[in-house]
Image 1: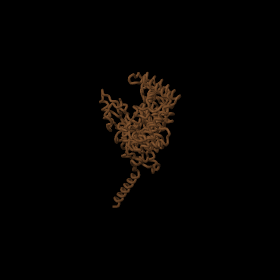
Image 2: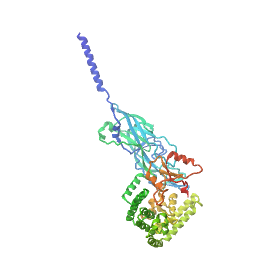
Image 3: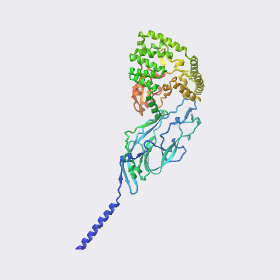
Image 4: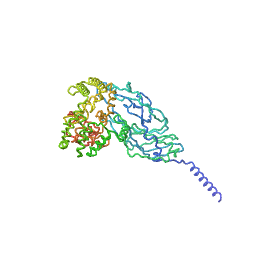
Length: 583
C-alpha cells in the first residue's frame, strides 16, 4: 500500500515545482495613465511640425521627405526681415501677414509596457481646433489637416527658413534689404530635430480622433504629436519608464480649451504690441488721451476732463483735436471756467472765433464772460496767424494741387503716371521738410471746415498716404523725417489714419451694418468705439478702432451678402445711409 502513496507524493511535488517556476518567469506588464504622460511632457509650446511640401522650411525642389519639428518661436514675420514688396504694375500693393499657433489635446486611454522586449502600446485620442483665423481676403479651398505621431529617438539639426513662393513675382517685385530675391532666399535658421528610427501613425485632425501606436522604448525615446501651425505635444517616454524620479513632483498644467494664440497680426509681432501696451501703461501723451476717450465713450465727461488736465500739466504742446475734446468735456461737465480756459488754447492754433458757432458752445456764448473772452481770443488768434510760415503753407498747398491734378477722381491718370507723380511730389515734399520743417499746427495752423468743424488731419496728409501706397524710391527718407516730427509732437503719427490699414480686422461695415467675424472673439470696447462714430452729437474726435468698410456692389450684391452670412455675425445696424462713405 505504500507504493501508490509514494508515486502520488512525487507527482504532487512536481506540480508544485512547475507552477512555482512558471510564476517566477511570468511577465509583469506596466501600465501608465494620463497623469504619467502629463508629468513627462517636454518642450511645451516650442516645436512646430513641418513636412517638406514647399513650405518656408524647405526648398521647393528638395526631395527630402523627412518631417522636422522646428522651433520657430523667433520667427519675425516676412516684412520684419527687411523684405519689401512693390507692384510692377504701378498699383497700390500691401503685403499683410497673420500667423497663429493652435493647440492639440492628447488624451491617453490605454498604455501598456512590456519590460521583456521594451515594447510599449499606446492608445488614445487627439483633438484640435481646425477652424481658426481664415484669411478673409483670400478665398481658398480648405485643405484637410493631419496629425503625425512619432515614437523614437530624436536627432538634432538646423532648418533654414526660405522666402518661398510668397506671391506672384510676375506682378510684384520682392527685395530683401534692397537685393533681388527668389524662393530660395534665406530669411532665418532655427533649431529643429527629426526621428531616424521610429514608429509612425498618421490621422486626420478633428474632435477626439482615435490613435494607436507601438514601438520599442529606450532611455532617450520620445512620443511626439505634430501638425502644421499647431504646437507639438511631446512626451519623454524614456524618463517615464526608465527614470521615473526625473519628473517627480513636476506640476501638471492642463489646458482647458483648444484655442489658438496669435503671434503676428498685420505684419506686427503680437509680443511687440503687448510690450507697447505695457509701456503705455507707464504713462505717455497717448495714455492720457486714450483714458479720456474711454471716459467719453461711457459719457463720464468730468473724468475725461481730468485726464486732459493731466495731459496739459505734463505736455506743454497739445494737438488741436485734444484741446477740441477737452473744451467739450468741460462744457458737458458744467465747468464753464475750464471750458473758457481750454477754448483759449485753440487761438494758439490760429482757429478763428467762428469755430465757436457750433451748437455745443451755445451755453458759453450766453455767458457774461463771453464778451471779454471773444475780444482776447480774436487778438491772440490774429497774432498767431501773423507768425505763420506762409512760404511753407503755400508750398505744401502747391504740392497738394500737383498731386490732385493726377489723382483727382474726375481726371485720375493711369497707374504708371500716378506712380511717377508720387515719386516727383515725394521728392519735393522731402526737400520742403528738410528746409522749412514739418507743416505743423504751430507753423501753418489747424484746418477747419465750414467754420465750426475741426479737421484732425490736414488735406496735405494725402501726400503721405500716396507715398506709403506707391512706395517711391525715397520713401525711407520721408519716413525718417516724419519720425523726427512725431517725436517733436508736430506730426501725430500714433493716431494718423495712415497706420490703420483695416487688414485683418475682426469688424466690417457693410450696407450700414456692423459685422463681427465668426473667427474672432467679441470685443464690446471695439464695438462701442465703432458705434460711437455714428452717434456722436457733440462732435468729439475719437479713435474709432480698426474696421473695414465693404463696398456695396449694386450690380451683384449676392456674393457679398452670402459671404457675410457665412463668415460674420451681425452686431448692429449703424446707419440707414448705405453710401455714407462715398459722399
